[in-house]
Image 1 (spheres, protein in one colour):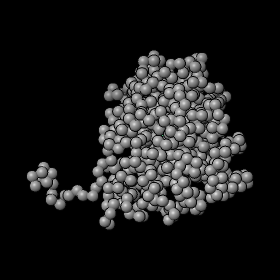
Image 2 (spheres, rainbow, N blue to C red):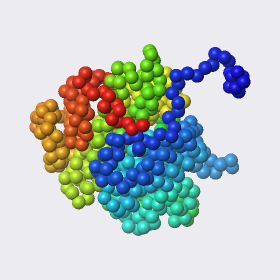
Image 3 (cartoon, rainbow, N blue to C red):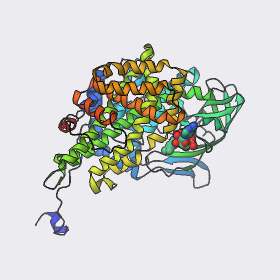
Image 4 (spheres, helix red, strand yellow):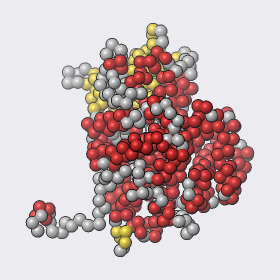
Length: 549
Ligand SMILES: Cc1cc2nc3c(=O)[nH]c(=O)nc-3n(C[C@H](O)[C@H](O)[C@H](O)COP(=O)(O)OP(=O)(O)OC[C@H]3O[C@@H](n4cnc5c(N)ncnc54)[C@H](O)[C@@H]3O)c2cc1C
């Protein structure tokens, strides 16, 4: 009665059966699936750094920064008080703290700077962990990471920009790049009249002096508008071309890029996404004139890869919150995690997350080995859109189910699942929406049928071991032989994804997990909710085998 709380709270106010905060949790040490996949694919050397990052992001300070950066979204200041244009987006200090941590850990650069086998896998491990902390800052990380190969093709720009881009420093100052420690790069492609069909771009580039052009037009979506430069598509007489447009010019003046407004987004709120206008903005031609889209293809390939890893990480975050809640909350006389039907839900979610992680890290390994191995190059090309499509399709349903595990708390903004739920559909929209990605799979198969050989070579050893997988493989081969039309692109891509996930589980995971996956995902015909594994599934091993608390 003398405790301070009881003196100020009504006597009815007793807190019971509410799970403790999930703090001090190490998402690396607790994740045997991740650690095994990273080791298998050659990235085990990242262990100490991954453990340290996981420790940071599992701590209350970083979780609070993630919350604050999303609850206090960026604000646009177009003018100063005297009426001069300033085009500044101002962020909550928590956003800058997150950016400093992410860029400081080399999340945007490690794959290029590590110079040792497994660099893509190791960086993917950090990215997977980061997406368990805050997703908005993953956008500048990914775009900056993916800009590197483009800039490597342009020696004079690369000489100035790459040392800053590759540096493990976050430097938000409005200064010419020569005077900065670090630099970030954004992308300005989408216009009002078309995002998937970029050929519809109307922004014009007029030759000015040497390689320099003056760009005039609008961009309907431009995320991270405080980036130091934007890879931009604009029309030249030869057709759509790629330009590098710095925000601050070498003489310290602002380039003529005007931010019209910020998008009021469903989620991803810590990250600003703007509508911008170029009015004779200075941009330097990158690649050949008229070859803008091919110039940016490599970048798009890398951003899609990053999304695959980010989605797998986000699934794991949602699963962790659901597991934590179920282990601490009781209903009807026992912990939720002990209720048979909740165990089916948790096991099914754990299985989905496991299959996503296996696919993401197999893909990361393929990127690592692609330079000197044609098979791996082919696999990276084909598996990127396959995995991007399927994991992005699964994420919203996955997060919704984990949210439901928390009951009413899951729907309240005080818990992180509400934020993850609003975040979930975005990955399926940007960097190629679902249909566009599936059509890319078809285009790739049509242009280079050899890609499919690399895919089958990965699957076949697993199909030889598991008759049910072999049957599904035979069905898909038949479907492909009939040269299905565009309207079948989702059906085919989904099946390509499921077979790959099944095969990876057979080859690299425990037999019971592979069996449960194949029985539930490859034999059933659609329409399933999570929590519908059949009675042969080993729920205990699926749940407990996914976490080392
Ligand atoms: C939060 C956010 C941030 C973004 N940031 C950036 C950024 O920084 N830079 C940038 O350039 N863009 C950015 N975008 C834009 C994004 O890349 C586009 O929205 C996306 O590419 C889709 O383009 P669209 O909106 O014009 O839709 P549309 O191209 O009109 O597509 C609408 C739908 O039609 C489907 N579709 C298109 N073509 C076909 C077809 N042939 N057959 C069947 N279906 C088809 C698509 O899959 C989609 O589902 C951002 C978007 C969001 C939501």
